[in-house]
Amino acid sequence: MSESAARMVFPLSVTLPVAALAAILEAACGYPPALLAAIGHPVMWIGALIDRLDTALNQPEFSERKRRWMGVLALILIVGVPLWITGAVLDLGYRFLPAPVMLGVQALGTCTLVAQKSLWEHVRAVGVGLRQNGLAGGRQAVAQIVGRDTAALDEAGIVRAALESLAENFSDGIVAPLLWAAVFGLPGAVFYKAVNTADSMIGHLTPRHAAFGWAAAKLDDAVNLPASRVAALCLILAAPAENRAAARAAVRRDAPRHRSPNAGWPEAAMAGALGLRLAGPRLYKGVRVEDAWMGAGTPEATVADLDRGLVLYRRACLILAGVLLVGALLFMIPA
Image (tube, rainbow, N blue to C red):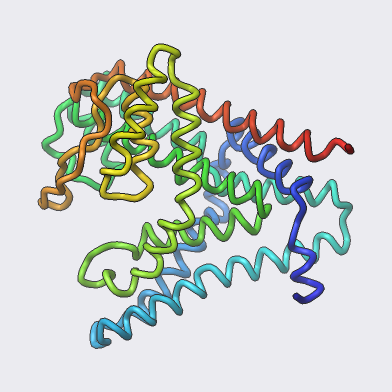
């Protein structure tokens, strides 16, 4: 390992405080709109790289085998370029700035890769749309956060879609980047976000991306596996006391039946905690996708259930931040 690379391997006394501070900062401030307008967002920068690689390496005349190998090369670059830039910036910073300052720099960088506040705002907008503009308002708002067909959804379908997105994105957008940061610091969060963004853009079973995005989809499944289990645990602990047993039972019974190896865990926990049934059959671009139901409650979700889901989500975020903060304090205090 080179001297520069060695300096990017951080102890838990650094990485846990980075993750804890990032969770607190992002929950309080989110990503400032002025900053977004001025320089964009790190996910947008990674997305631009993915677009360029998809155009350059995913040629229609390539065989399926060659597309798959080109997808592997693309994934190496998608992960490697952001990590190289992150490592170079941190290496330079640690040469000239005190370690406590650089811990703050890592926390600020990590909080840009977490989405607690924006997820809450997008899901809350679905409830606002339903209350103010009925089904049309709800459909328009939920279409911003889900990939399924929304034109024919009734209120129950809109609310279920929003709650499923809330549960899955709690795992992918909050727990996973913070978990990777808790172990590896800012480079861990950057690695995770690069993989996850690649999966969201090219990890689809479409004629163009089934082979090219195969590596991205497989790696995303692997890197999300720990977070999906932690997310389910946070949601179970956040559930009202009378619903925790149902949430645990839903996870044990239903999560393995979901078509995704990871999404079923937080979705089942959310369903059980709220006394609902989530997931099940749905339409994507006119194609009916059969999936198992998560939870043993009613599928007739209402806008009031969406409110309860948002409360559950905030509690789960507080539990996660609290665990990270306690871990940070334990590792920072000398034995």
